[in-house]
Image (cartoon, rainbow over all chains, first blue to last red; front, side, top):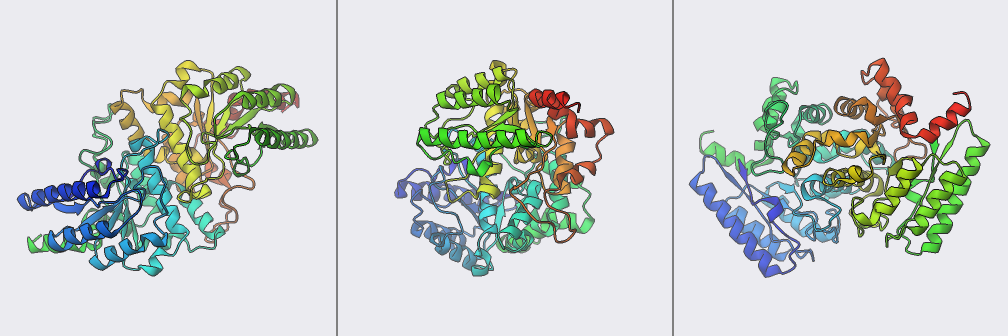
Length: 274
Length: 274
């Protein structure tokens, strides 16, 4: 299990940089400790001390510490540290030093917001999905991966609204004179945190299997089970198994892709003989 | 065709109320003229003079003028007149006078934002879909339709991210102690502006046919055609016809639902012998 501090608790909207540093460091040290105590179960993923002003020096320092000193295999990057979308798109050059470090360290970044600070956006029912959608469209309109070809971004919640509107993105990209969005899928990966069969069926129908990473959640947005079926909402493995994938595609979604996208995870598992 | 001023041109973020009034009135008068000149082709839908401060007196006056004097059959309501989500959720009581008037006049409201005023949100590729998603979650969390049982809201773009994440909404509603979101579908309708077959297939699989309204666009977000197939992106009728609906469901999606949800449209058509 990729184990990171809880997204909604990252609270990057707190403007004080020393607080952000202390909170990220405390969270990451605890995650590291769990990963060492239960090395067969958990691989650590970092929280970064982002702040609404977008300053990156401490962010990159903590990323380097967790990856190079503590063996973290990935990181969470909040595309909206303000919680009110007061900052710049992730394709803006102000973000480049972070992407440069992420690429150099060869860890993927999960692009995930923290708690919303706007009453129009329910964190779990709107803000998270909207962030996924917004970030993907930022990537459609820019050349981020020409500049950082080794950068790998994971967009959670099955890509927000994107696969459902894949034709819209293809048409918009053409209208904007941009490459077909399929070209992004060398660097962008969607997880399977979509909590019903029809949604996972759409995801696997539209997005190539090599760009889908199996995921579920623990302490996630949706707890409990469907009263009609008794199946836990976030038992996404069941949906993935029923999505009609070939054996090869299923193996890629379940394991192969994750080991390719998270090479440090692959090394960690290989060292354990797995 | 339901004919309204173009969503992205409503520009409710302009703070000056007299400007908003003049712009809405000019737009609606032109729409009315087109509807009278080509009565067999166009049924008028109103732009409302909303402003970022949320003041509703002029908004309700223009709604009454267009519906009672000009025979408009519906209206567009912008859930984010600021363009930066600076206002309150549509379930906030500050919106009640508008919902009261919409209910009394018995016209549906299409809940559609105008141009985004935040560089993180591409208007067509993020802001529109995010608004659909955000508004639906606002409705999940509130009792708007207990207070206004006759209110009917149309959420465009196939409901944003909602049908793709229908299990998430069911699980979240249960976690929040709210009714299953299916209960909202007596008052909420999703259109079919989803620009590929897989998306329309998901929509019709997840959402009951009686809550789906056929729609495409003219001067819409996505123009041109899929280079792989030669099919125009927004030829949604083709997707709907191929979605495997029963004859009864197809008739409802194509016409019956619209005549039920827009009774003034039904009366207009009936008067023409259609």
